Image 1 (cartoon, one colour):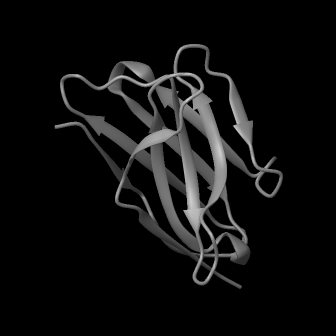
Image 2 (cartoon, rainbow, N blue to C red; image 1 turned 135 degrees about the vertical axis):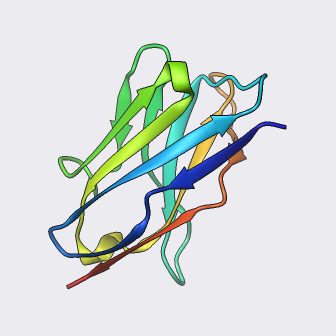
Length: 118
């Protein structure tokens, strides 16, 4: 069974850093693009960043540009999110897979909590 497992969340002070990982498992896993999303308490889930697995093309939400970096290790089916954090980044972070161009993200991880104190 294909699944995504996030890790690397935790609690840090403002100005600190965390690196999230998202590992895909399953013999038949494939992805066109991988993304990171987040959901803060009482708010809608929002897009954070994405990366195309073949080309490495990246795209970021304006709120994280210059502070977050998404990367991938295609051989390991793993994506990363390096974050330099502010308190407003506090949320549960999810990774997700877009199987093919033009379709929605169809596979989601269970999420990992990131808490940033001021």
